[in-house]
Structures are given as C-alpha cells and as structure tokens.
Length: 165
Image (cartoon, rainbow, N blue to C red; front, side, top):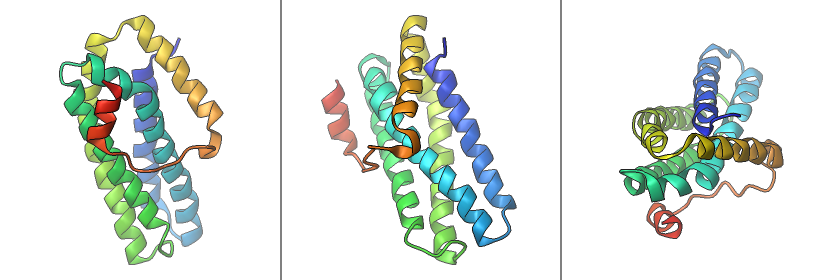
C-alpha cells in the first residue's frame, strides 16, 4: 500500500520537474502548456494536503499546530501567485513575476514540509494510518480529476488549526 508521505514526496518531485520545464520552455504556447498543468497540480496538491494530511498532523505532531498553520499560510501564498499569473499574458513580465513568486513560495514550502512536517508526521503516525491516508490521497486525486469540485480558495490558517484540533 502507498504511504501518504511517499505520495506527497512524489508530488514534490513533480513540482520541481515542472518548474525546470518552465526554464526550458521557449514560446508562449509551450509556457502555457507547462504552467497550466503545473499550476493545477499545485492547487490540487494543496487541497489534498488540507483534506487528508494536516488534519492528522495538527492533532498528533510534536509541533503539529505550528507546522499546520505555517503550511496553510504557504498554500495560500502559492494559490495567490497561481491566481495572479492567470491575470496576465503568458510570458509577460507580470506573468513571470507571479510564476516566480509561486516557485519561490513552493520551494520554501517543500523544504519546510520535507524537513519538519513530514518527519513529525512519520514519528507519530502508524504504518497503517500512513497507508490508509495514502489510499485516501489516491482516491482524492481520482475524485477531483483536473480539480473538479475543488474551491481553490485561501483558508484562514488559525481557523483551520482550531477547526481540526
């Protein structure tokens, strides 16, 4: 069975590859093709973590509440940058500024999650729970193919933590 932390790390690797593909894209059509797929994946991933991983971490991690609040704030910044990019012509300076903001925010978030939140979760979650959540993760992606029925809205980090304690 798939461990949720491994599935999350798989997504993280896909994000890094996606941003690298943007570095290699040479025209607006190619930029759009790469960015649309990557931006959608970033949005779906944040929703999946907020639905599946963080409700458990907030209750069971050593620093779960703090890590969760920080992660929700990071997701908001990434979502905001993705949304901002959609307001501009692909390849324009304003579009690139939004894409680079998403990249920076995402890079910082991945490092924090990989170095803090995921190790904290692994220390406190049984192998069985990690497998159960991995199955829920895969189901979530299947049920929300191409972001179907997901709101992609910012959440109040403090309220999120309170709601899931």
